[in-house]
Image (cartoon, rainbow, N blue to C red; front, side, top):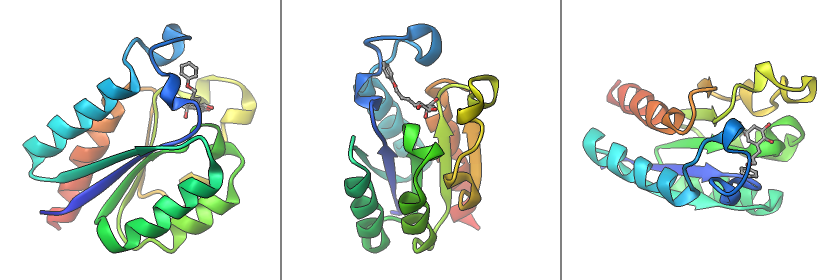
Length: 145
Ligand code: CA2
């Protein structure tokens, strides 16, 4: 069974505690449960990780080369700043789906550009936490060939 790494970046451990008008009411635990149930229904395995640290995210992406067939990543604010995360994703061979809970294009100008999008196979923004399920569905399609 193909395994998918679902990686959440900085501050996403705070989901459900503040700014529900932007990020909804679901917690990170809810997101991870959604990913687990969606992956199971698609015949995929899933491993969920979250880190507030850029270097740790880079290490997790590097380690995924040996264990994951695809990556779903919400890089949080590092989307807009991190060449290091882009470089790590560039040495990963499988599909990369970038997810943003909010519609970054309808927000401040500094959120409109994502370094990760240059590498992403697809980008989902503004679909709330359902974006993670949509990303897994797309990965199942891509892995089926
Ligand atoms: O819309 C997204 O998913 C973002 O990746 C979320 C990031 C933001 O910097 C990106 O521009 C767009 C921020 C995540 C912070 O999440 C919080 C959730 C609840 C309370 C505080 C922060």
